[in-house]
Amino acid sequence: VDDKELQIYVNQVGMWLVNQTERPNLPWRFGVLDEDTINAFAAPGGYVFISKGLFMLFRNESELAGVLAHEIGHVLVQHHLEDIKERARNGIMKDVAAELISQELGAGWGTLVKELTNLGVDVWESGLNRDDEFEADQVGVVIAARAGYDPYGLLGVLDTLNRINPSNSESYKQMHATHPEPNARILLLDSQMAETMGSYITSPVNSAKLYQFQNQLENKKG
Image (tube, rainbow, N blue to C red; front, side):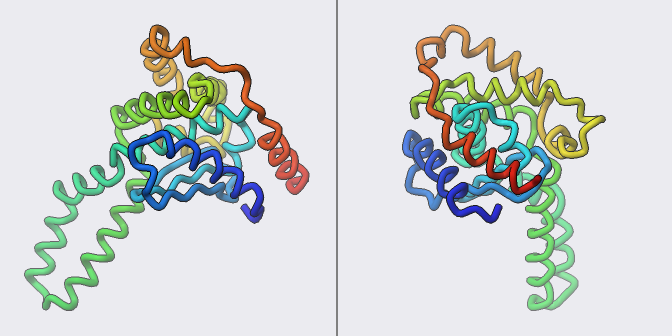
């Protein structure tokens, strides 16, 4: 999104969250993509992105923090990196190795780079497995709580997503295709948080900046 102040704001929230983790010194970068689709994803090395469509659904800053913390969790546990390695071991690297044998090494390296690039793109489009998503949820609520946010902010976002029928919403289909059902995530998180996170519920966070940027984006759209 071509809005410097918005990007600074999201990076400020994101950096405050990562400062509560064991890896604050990664080259973290946060961004809002100019996409009306509803989605969020992370990349190895500390890159976290949310779509404009998802940003517009947040009801308070704790919900923004909850989603960013979830994606931070993926980076900390190296879910995407491990997924890429696993896919490489199980399939695509065998094809590349066979081609390297049949070609001169110089030509083969071009194929290797191309295949690994395609593999990385496939990870973002197909999503991670359910266990990885559930683990990122669990890590994320702890990070949010450490940062002083209501850890139930992520549950609030999941509740909003749970009310969206993916068959009636083109903008939600990618999120629905790459993440477990929101209701399953809600049930699992709620059961785990009930006895441990109650004391971390904080008074409402000042969400004035969030609302300001949502209004600006809405006015631009209009």
